Amino acid sequence: MNKRIYLSPPHMGGEEIKFVQEAFESNYIAPLGPQVDAFEREFTDIVGIPHAVALASGTAAMHLALRILGVGHGDEVIAPSLTFIGGVSPVIFQGARLSFIDSDRISWNMDPDLLAEELKKREVVGKLPKVVITADIYGQCADMDKISEVCTRYDIPVVSDSAEALGATYKGRSAGAGARAVIYSFNGNKIITTSGGGMLLSEDKAIVEQARFLSQQARDAAPHYEHTQLGNNYRMSNILAAIGRGQLRVLEERVQEKRRIFQYYKNALSDIPGIEFMPEAPYGQSTRWLTVVLIDPEKFGATREYVRIALEIQNIESRPVWKPMHLQPVFKDCPMRGGSVCEYLFNRGLCLPSGSAMTTDDLDRVIQTIVDCRKKGTEVPQLAVDYGQRVSPRITQN
Image (cartoon, rainbow, N blue to C red; front, top):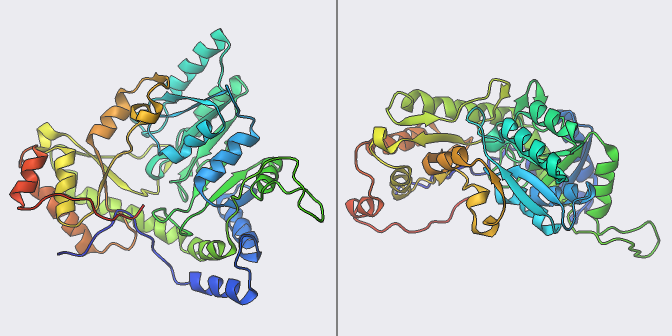
C-alpha cells in the first residue's frame, strides 16, 4: 500500500517546541498565560487588525461575535451558502434564522450583487438582517469593499469568516480587514495550526474585550466567583498558543508553498480538456489553502466522484467542494437567493491534496492518478470493481 497522502495535514516548523517548553517550565498549562498574551500580540502585528482574543475554535469566535453584535431570538442573519457549517451554526445557537446567498464565479464567495438585491427587497418589507456573514473560501477573500458598501447603506455589521484565509490579501489588506469582526481558525488542516483553536479580531476594542470576558465564563470582577451574565469556556490554552507562536514564524513560507503546489498542479493539468482551476480574484492574492479543480465529465470523460474514488483507492485523500448550506438537511427551510453557481461548484468541484510538506513525488502521484481517469467512464461502482476492491472510508485529517 502506498503511503497516505492527506488533504492538508499539519506542518510543524520546529520552533513550536521551544515555546511549548517555555510554557511547561513556567507551569502555565491551563487556559491563559504569557504564551496566549504573546500569541494575540504577535498575531495582530501580522494581520494589521489591532485587537484580538485567542479562543478554542473559529466556531467559538463566530458565536461570541454574533452574541456581542446582538444577534438573538427571532433575528435573521444572511450568509453565503458555499461555506463550512462551523461558520454559520452559531446563528442557530443564538436562536436566530439563516438566509443564504449564492456565490459569484469570480471568487466563489458571496455574490455582492445578489446581496444588494436581497437587502433592497428586505428594506421594502422592513425585514433587514441583524448581521451579514461573509466567508473567504479556500484561502480567497470575498469582495469585502463591495459587501461592506452594500451593508453600510442599511447600517448592518459584517462579520468575516476568514477561517481558511490567513495569509491572503485583499487590496493589500489582510483577509477580513474592514469587517466589524473577523474570525480565523487554527484547526489541524489550516495554513497554520494550534491543533485546534481560533481568533476573534476587530478594530473595535470593546468587541474584543467583551469577547474576552464572555469566553472566561463571564466572571465579574470580585474576589469570589460572581456572575451577572452567562458566559462560555472558550479560551485558548497556553500550550496551544505556544504552538501557534511557532507556527506564525513560518506563515509566509507556508503560503508560498501552498501557492507553489497550486502552480505545479496547474502546469500539469490545465491543458487537459474538462479540468478547470479555481480562479484568483483580481483584487487580491489567495493563499491557495487548497487547490480546487472543476471536472466537466463530458469533456474529461469521468465524473468528479469517479476521480475522487480513484484517488482514494490509491490512498490519496481528496474532498468535494463544500456542499452548499441550503442543500444541507439541517437548513432545508432556510431562504436562498440564487443557488445555481454554488450547486455547480459542488457538483463538479474537487479539493486536491495541498499539504505544504508535499514532495514532487507526492504531487506527481496525484496528477498521474487523475490523468489515468480520463475517458474511463462515470460509473463509480464499476471503478471499484475495476480495481478489484471495495471502497471503504478511511481516517482523514480534519
